[in-house]
Image (tube, rainbow, N blue to C red; front, side):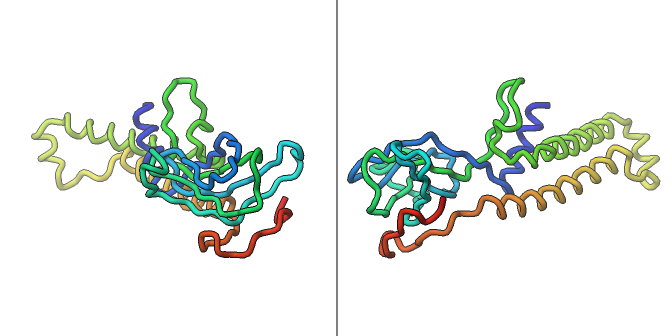
Length: 208
């Protein structure tokens, strides 16, 4: 059952992505590139917080994501480059990324461990149920005698298991479309400059 659920989670990952806020790192003066995990698909936002002013939160607007970073920059091949020149040493950086959904490993793992949105928690169940019904019905057909299959070849309709599997698969795909639209509407990349540092310097209080 766990394997089937994880296969479904992998299938879901072709249309949806997980969202993870990485552990905060401290900005180092003169350092503008930072390595990201290999499972990173894109950078959604880069937030800065001054430890001396914890309520003063700003989202950077001048950064770039490199998904093919050279080994000299990142051992994972993923990196983010920061071009805002007003930030100084000691500032905490918090990067939120879109990522591949994580499989469930332990029996007590929760759906949140996949990093998929909680509203999509029904998707693995629907997809796995459709797979299992289809597989069980296929096995049943294979175990019938050749003679019985031959006699019924022209009259056999779809089985209840096949009908239920098709229904669940259609519902699964419908829910997938709904969740994809919801995810894109709620986690799109924040507005930012796209020219690699040539835009005017953004003001500190751009957003809170």
